[in-house]
Length: 112
Picture (spheres, rainbow, N blue to C red):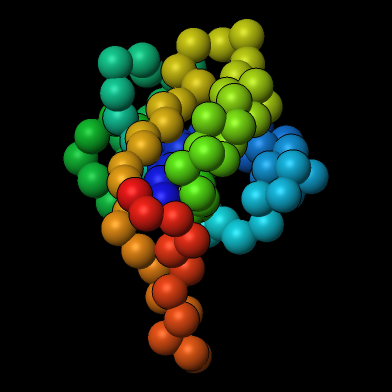
């Protein structure tokens, strides 16, 4: 399994969520976040919580089977990009297994 963490601009996140959902990716976690990187957006401002220049982002997290990861990446990339610089970034990590809390059932369907 793969965990996908995507940091997407707030004005693009609704498109990303809808496209993922329309393509079978129903379970995801969203968090409001602040980011800093090489590109400083026009709207970047000093953070109230951190003493750095920041830019608002939404962190989207989802876990999928290995063979579904590239499709999710393509959907996020296509729907998250804009004509502006600094649209965000996607990280991929391997997940050994996942378990349902209620039943303890493993979600691993294939050997990794």
